[in-house]
Length: 241
Image (cartoon, rainbow, N blue to C red; front, side, top):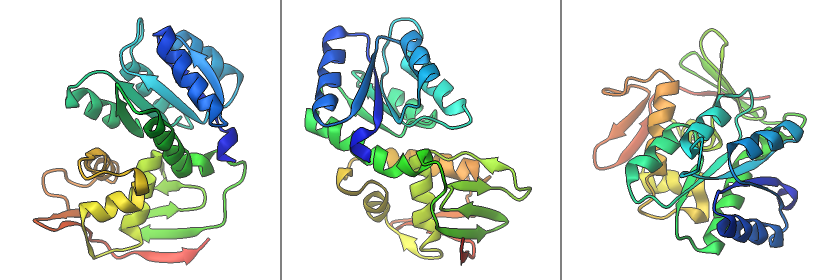
């Protein structure tokens, strides 16, 4: 159940840390409050964490460095990055490093809970002990097992995807060789939590292209359609797992 998911709140301001922890606890989540990287590492050493609510500006190791480490493991941990910085560059860097979403301070408590739930919906199957029954997609020498969320390249080497990247790829594979608007992709990958100014989808498209070896300057796999949106060009074979 999502309601019993375990969330680590990493925030060095004690008042904000207590506020966020209490809010999530009231919403039915299990919460581990961490002052910084040391506390988080201890927590990760004791138990599985389903999501990290991570402040960008921390004493000692900062949030971007922590996010990089969390995504470098065998099973990347979903991250909701919280930042008081107004510079979009910091948010984009966090998303490039693998954060699933970001929320600027000050934030509406209901929006924080909504974004936490949205990330957990997208990523919860990765924490289940057995892969769910699903479908297998093959395209341009690549294979994606939707049940286990496993992407393999031409040499069957695994390629890690964040929850957002997986949802985006599934949306493209389910509708190949069709022009999909940015708003459609936002709806399919972020649902009710999307807003027309959300730039997360653009960062995730860029990351996904890079992981698929698509040429950034002249992409041939995920093509940009001027004035329209995006088109997944390869033929896609779909089969039951």
